Length: 453
Image (cartoon, helix red, strand yellow):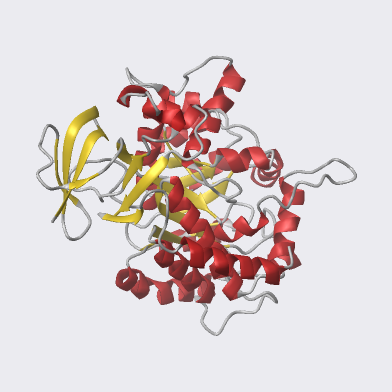
């Protein structure tokens, strides 16, 4: 048993002082006791909040950050032109580089306050599109990268078979992604025993309705282990919505609600372009909306109508997606600001008497834990001991009490709000540093040099 002592901690009922957190040997919280003396416990030297799960990541895309800002001559840059740059990056990325980039992304996540990540893993084959001798080669590189970083992993192997609705054949740029149901089943069979042995959660991810047929979607969902999470990209782009309607007579979220039996296992990634009826249906299903505001802004996707969704009882989570920005505070800031710009009011995602930052952090942590399939996201007995210690010496946080410290971290001039991170009851970041960050960065530098920019 390990005991942590927090001078102030965010519990489900709000902020409490002098909180002792007893953690069992398996990394789960045994008891949470406010108003207790430190009594030799390990001091957490700042305000303590639940660590944030990262609900959606493509770790390899970290190598693209900052490299897609040159405008095309036609000034028609969009998600679709960015996607071509991503394909070209993959043409040069071997397995060693893939792991090195993923490890860098995961270390950055831990330092930013993420304790878990749902990796939407769709690169399966070698640069020529040929299967590796071990079909799980790149999946296991992701697992190794997560182990290096100490971040809890929900691995979501992606089924991707088509370039468009109705079974359009895949393009050359998609050759590293493509599986048939039979080979995808073999991949899951290879990974399932390793998940139990190495401690990662295993789910499935049909990529999107444009990349799977209805029959394939049904087959892939049936392959998911009992209780496993199911993530899918949906309604990210207006073109995708138009193409889906032309193919099926229904919009993407509408089609899923009518055909896929959504429930609490599911995470609808992006869901940007939705109607009021779709919002209510998604909220009622118990699924989580997986939002990635910085990536959605970077790619010009649009803005998810989060206020109407939350008012309907919807659950949401945040993710770093393309990893151009790796910062849960920035994701929440942009999510709230996007709603302010849309509706021209402030503090829109505040709930009850809690300030907006506290409301958003608590909601996203709970939603992220659900979508990652982990008992986490709150400082309560039985939950995994995933904790973030905010840095009281960060100038933007100086002078703030518990009621405003998360608002200062999210909306103030704060650059490095995180001091320490505890994952499963053990420190993985202390005083802002990760113990492996130097060697991980060295490998990342070597990988980028081989990729040639």
